[in-house]
Amino acid sequence: MKVRVNEGVLEGSAVENAYGKPYFSFKGIPYAEPPIGDLRFKAPKPKQPWTGVRQAKEHGPICFQYNVFSRPPVNTGEEDCLYLNVYTPYIQPQKYLPVLVFIHGGAFMSGSGNQDFYGPEFLIRHDVILVTINYRLEVLGFLCLDTEDIPGNAGLKDQVAALRWVQNNIRNFGGDPDNVTIFGESAGSASVSLHLVSPMSKGLFKRAIMQSGTMVSSLVEPYGARDRALLLAKELGCNSKNDKEIYDFFKNQPVERLVNVQVPITYTELAKLSPKVYFSIVSEKKFSDQEWFLEGNLLDLFRNGIHEGVEVINGYTEDEGVLLFMMGCDIDDVFNHANKFAEFFVPYDIANHISIDQQIELGKKVKKYYLKDASARKEDNLDNLLKFFGMNLFVYSSTAWQKICAKRNKNNIYLYEFTCKSERNVFARFEKGSELIYDRRIPVAHADDLLYLFPGSSILPPVDMNSKTFQMIDQVTKLWTNFARYGNPTPDNSLGVKWQPYTLENQSYLDIGEKLVPGVSPNEEEINFWEDIYREYYPQKLP
View (cartoon, rainbow, N blue to C red):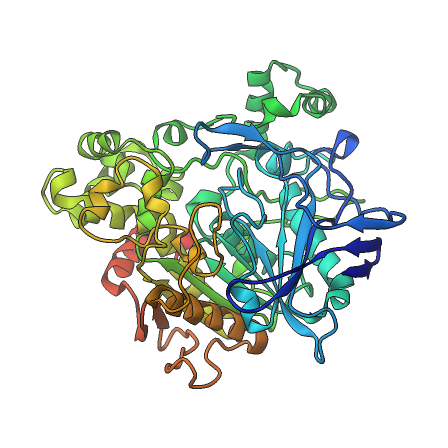
């Protein structure tokens, strides 16, 4: 099957689908010039046309990264990585199809859009087009020197370039450029939340779905980006104070030296037992001849409103705190720190803004709330400790995002908690300590929701279409594709429930489990406690 795009002709493949809907696959499509040489750290450049027929049957290279999930972890990928994949059930449908563009997670340091995990087989059954993308990661994608040569946010500008490519070309695959939904998980979800306020992204999509991550999260809060870049230069052997010399030094470093680099700039960063995201979003300085992705205080930008008319789904999993195991934290260290240091319980974004005395005071309050007067012990209060981490990492920030958005916007926004449990809940199993949970219950860990949207063929066997598990997969994919098609995840009674939009008055949400259960004000008591904390110690992040 051949398709012409603006840059030339692509030849893809016709694929049988074990889950009932055959589709056409076009992999490894370049959406920008390779970001190498003088283009390292720069905004992506449009792809130049090619001659002849370009084969689109294999994935392009993934972005160079340190793969923490391989055993043992290894460096993999290439700098020439700006490729996307398109999967469509029809090349010439009677009516153009809704388009879903997925932005992968991985803490802005790992991952790809490849089919070994993010295959189209589940979603495409509902007559939508799926696009998955690669974007630059870690230092290559998010280094910022606050200069014209290294302004920051290159990875986010890659995402914008991919969305522009979709606008220009998706009709040729049967897709509707006026009905594009962007969705992502974790760092991909935080990226989606940023596209909702970035001037570069305005008009490139109609709807958005955020799964476990927002720009309000402490994991992506901009902090000391230039200081971090200068420290990295010193760590790699450059002691110059001249920005041009530092840029030339970074530009000429072997790519292997620019991944898996640990550059904490505060003791809090060094000491915290949690996912460490050293390179991510920044507020950019303006340079006259460049587009900027974000400029100014990010919370102020958000409080001024997301793009007008864009509908949003936002939510989190039941056991987000299990991410602590998934990132390799030693469980014995976790409990040791929890018992010795009150600051252990201070939310990470607050810790950067208050004194040590205040941290100790706050830490004692939080510890008392979650553990009462008991010591932290695996046998007694593991679940309460994980609830703290889940709220700290994702749940509070997702709820705060929802409330801030509801205050300012007339857009329809929806909130959910994901509670599906089956053999597909696997992410907590990847690290030691997981047996402490699985011996008692099936957790719904960070990223487990992905395996109800994508086959994850590299880590899971096929699923029986007659099983309860597949009923949940069908339910979740209908919610997501209904939303992409109509802007309403439950437009009729086919799912037996009505998911109401979230407002400050009703605070409606949907519990997405084996059954779909509407509710109001999820985790209300706990959220109230966290709002009291932020009110006292960091009111800028109050809803």
